[in-house]
Length: 439
Image 1 (cartoon, one colour):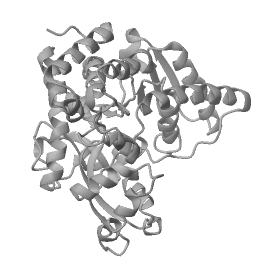
Image 2: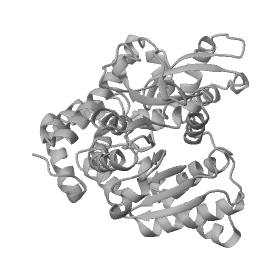
Image 3: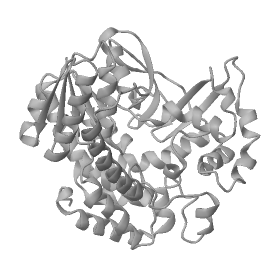
Image 4: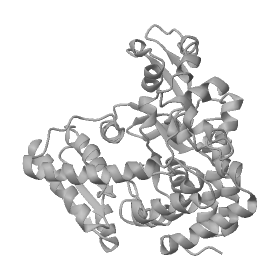
């Protein structure tokens, strides 16, 4: 069996996902095909993963494929394809996504999922993934595409609507949602045996139900702690708690992410909100710089001291592969096209995050009915941007980029229409050849 990893230069993540596969008796004899366009990073990943493979018993084999000219060979015959690419990397494209909007007074925290930064990341990534899809349709038409790259709903939604590739989008936030909430409100002791129901869209899915091991609804007790959490000057999770206060439900993704998905918290006219909610502006650039430096040190340590043991992580990928191969059911929170109205009050064209049963038949989404109307309304403010970004990428019409940015909650709450259009033009010019030509 062949498992292909696209963007294998994302060494830490590749190590986690492929290391998880090496922990599985079902998957460990596979060929792990590593693909990247950066030769140095690809070689670093090969060295680490080869050492890990030997350390864990020498099962399977690792192959590497460098550059677009070898992409079809990397994909040929694959049963699973894991996607973790970052088109344009931190330097230059993430820097552009942050610095150009700053000239207009528009500040961001992460800029990889929504907002003007998420729009631009989507626009430069969709053409690359469209190329992946064409190759996959030719050389591995039955493969399951596991997408980890952000903006999740934009990229997965494009693949699901406009290619023939079987695609599910995967995120880390569903697995840790309940844990993060109970930890924030000081109720970790209720975590064992807790059950939850989560549905919505990626990074803004809603914890619709949370019960303890005996089936008791935990929300009333959780909500009794809201004011004390919001009053804690050291709490880093205030945005999500404030969401729960005003909309009734907790959301899956972190507060620094959700602060820029709405119009409430990052506001030039109300700078005091940044401190009040502990919002880390420019968080993602800092994180990138630290991760790059941390990886260089870790790589040097591994070369000097040898590879460390790998403990299987909570990432979905290896468990999905196992479930498909063995036909043993496994449940995930997956990002799928809402074509069968798994969420009845969101559009069929939307990419939604719902419980999915994985078995030998692949990914089987579960219907959850209607979201609370206020939750669906908040999701729609993001879905509007996602659908228009996909439309811009599909048609190459600049007007759809303008419209996506005009409908983005954070961007529209800060800038005028003329400023938004000028910002889009500046970003297109700054990105240069990283974007296709729009008309």
